Length: 506
Ligand code: 4AD
Ligand code: MG
Image (cartoon, rainbow, N blue to C red):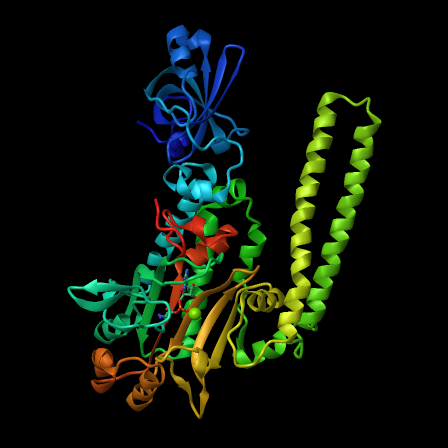
């Protein structure tokens, strides 16, 4: 058996493929079957004269997602997806699929989510899962090549790491315990044993709201490094994002460009140095009091709005022009269809542009009115990254809005050495990290201030009692990174079986 992704090694030879029918059309004694086998897609042409009536009719009777085996000659054909075509000489059904529920017409997302076990077979989901796999691989490669050791942190924990509001509690043999929100605290212990470690595992947050960026179960990569300050931490974070994104663009070019139509120039900005700004600078920039590259946030947004409005107006003119050609009549069918398609396309585009234009006045309002000391909202992150058009790192955050373990800035306890990495194009925070507090007195006082029970943190405090060292780390949200790389609107499509508020099935 040969896999579709291996076809280039078999040009001019006869191979046997096994897979599922992704599409089929018939024309004058020919069947054009698009076969998918998980590794790729391939058009297989079945000629009645070549295979005979029995085989032809057996294959012709199969409908969408039926499984089959096809044998044939591999031909190079650049017009085909994957670049090859198979001229079938023999074939047979393995198992029929009757009334496949996901037809080619548009379905609502709730329906598709209910059918997630089948939806995963579609082209777009196939591309997303391949990208997820490549991202996972490249993250491991990045850390392993640098001498980091992977560790598995426990998922059942007695304590909160990231605040108590998003804990899932469970009954652990009669005593309360929680699903882990983060492996970090255990990562810190392991870093004191092994030097540089990273976790790669699931984490859980009870996020009681429906957003495009939140899952209840998501995968996090958490490196932790002994003897790293927050500058070294930011260097590592930047190197990791740059390397992973660059490698994934290389490996998944087909998935990204052909299937998902991702604009790669947006991702290629990772080649530049990521700007690093303090929280306080970010606030000034957001509120329009500090310019970036000679322009304030207010000016950039107003320019964006004007550009969108111009594009919408231009499209309107083009729609009217094409419509009048249609109305005038007397054009050939081919041209008529082309015109109608183009009009529909432009209308869809204008709807999207209008949505974007409608957002901008609200963003401007909330940027201007931002209260210093608070956390940034989604639109604030969008505005900040828009000004740089690249990922941005924001560091030195107000103490009250960050976790208890973050190290205070020397001489200024109002700020902690936290850092968030924000992705551009509205994707927002994909990494959060910090240098860790080493002063046990400060930690004790913070644990109290955060209303956390000191007893369950005694083991963590031991790390400060016995050979404490400066150390830092961060957490990368795997699905957040995939969402940005793939240009997907909603995070739910980046994980095989998403768990989020209101959904734990299938
Ligand atoms: O910023 P967070 O809460 O940081 C931590 O958990 C630290 N313990 C990390 C560390 O320093 N070791 O979460 C880290 C990242 C976020 O930047 C985001 O990418 C992702 O985890 N994340 C989520 N992703 C999907 N759904 C959610 N509900 C998420 N919450 C956080
Ligand atoms: Mg965070």
